[in-house]
Image (cartoon, rainbow, N blue to C red; front, side, top):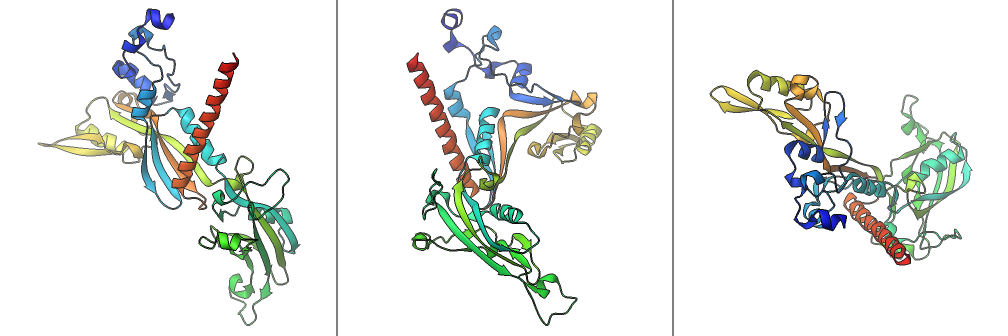
Length: 363
């Protein structure tokens, strides 16, 4: 009755029609000389009722505005923009990347001999954090019985003993004086079990990096062990995390409320340590400052420290524009990680929808 009687919701204006000062509060988290402002999200559907403007969520607007733009991508890292979503969705995506995408990692370490100075549990911990280059989609999770099979476990073995390299000068480096003085991740050798050799012949199982230092040995010391690699997620233990880091920041917005010319233009340019501003030649000896690289802004607020500049420069963050930075451990390509995270987020939404439908049916 309220929605249908008092307001004609289908005919109401959208937030694009807000006055400039309210539009700024709606779209931006502004930064002044001392603290941020407008940090709270204006999500209430009836927030602008007095102006006859509808602030409710619209699926059509979401479909029209949402997009992902890839800015940088390599085999180990990726930077992309996610535009048109609220912070809870962006943060859910980040947390999925950190904790809910399966990978392969060392879970069980069976140590037969360790006469190094590193305790068994520390050595096992270091081995557990070595990233494994194996596609988790090719393996199953270990069952509740904990039984290792050819489909859920990879076996690696290590047998390293340090010896003195005779005939080397005393002034030589440790790497020259000792054979196997440094135990590296490359000393872990994959031992195929069952049909694994045939299954992975086209993409042999290996470690992401063979040069990770695990321990130091001296003549007479030895490490012999067997390591079992299994599938898991980082929610269980950080060793299964597919990313070294996954973070986001809001898109910086740097705008001039009034035109800044002459000596003031040079002064404003000199205030910014990130070189966000450029000087534009207007001809006839005239010049003005323009914010050419707002994306480089770190929000240090040097350009709005004093009241006179704060009134002339708008320094803000775009509320629905997130700059994501992902650094993979090297086991899974960042592009694949993003795809898997999207699928996982969709699965969570499906579970929530089913739960809501069941609750509605029960009523």
